[in-house]
Image (cartoon, rainbow, N blue to C red; front, side, top):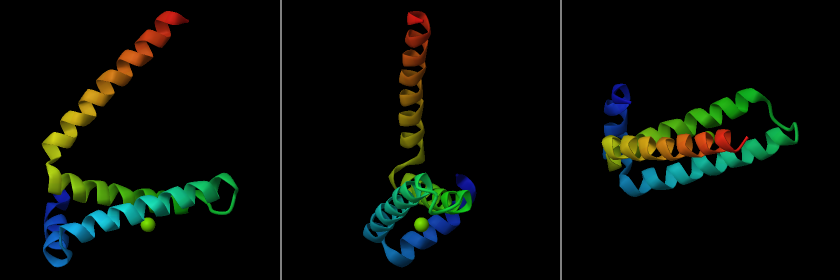
Length: 93
Ligand SMILES: [Mg+2]
């Protein structure tokens, strides 16, 4: 999201590209662990929300670095494929 560009730019300048990729991996791993714990009632919804926020920010950071337009095009392509799958499932029912 454009409104976070200043902070994405500052984080990139301060810590560098490699650290951003490493941080994204770490945040994804934390979300995975939280989801596993949530499934076993070890954590509440707020922890999932917090980890989702971390991952969303890192997705924003990496999208900023790699090109938000490219990511948006990939999302649209994948949504189009999903719509096709859903439509074919509806026809089969
Ligand atoms: Mg986290």
